[in-house]
Length: 231
Image 1 (cartoon, one colour):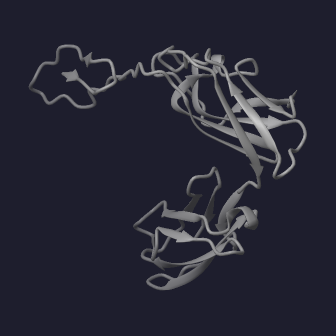
Image 2 (tube, helix red, strand yellow):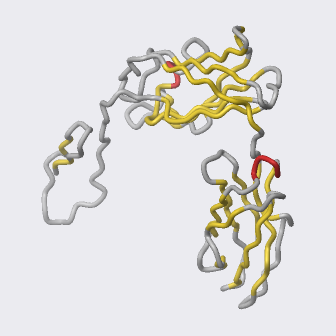
Image 3 (cartoon, rainbow, N blue to C red):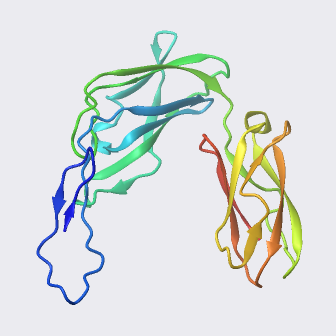
């Protein structure tokens, strides 16, 4: 079996006898493009950094990622937020999202300068090639979104309106929230996307399809804000 995709290294499986049918013939496609910073957001307690490729954690560290404010280095520590091991080597850890946690809070409305060195490398060991600098304005962070009641009872074959709220409300106002039941067999929602109002709230109706317990998963589009509520 030959696997081809533009921008990726072509891969071939080992020879396969047929019949019988061969299932799960998986390979690891490697992308050799230079990675870059896809997004960065600054908040009171940290800076979120997203790369367009998974990176080697050993190369994304306090030496290759720095933050400055007013010409002075901002003290803090860097942590991977979606860490996983390499497909080829379980000892090599990768991530595409990182958070620089500041030792002291940053003032909302102030500016910081994020610097990412060209030496940071992707999972394919490809360096960024150019230094990246971003000037970011510190904003308020959406830390959680979910149902106001920790447990909401939805009647079997009935409906129940749930109030969605976010923290902080000021930061979340007018953002879209994606809502997804973890079990479509137990519960359904009347809208998979709703917009929070000026108070950071929105309303959805949940229909109980089968007896049981499931969860609603919430995520604020374009942010790290997320949460889960039992129903």
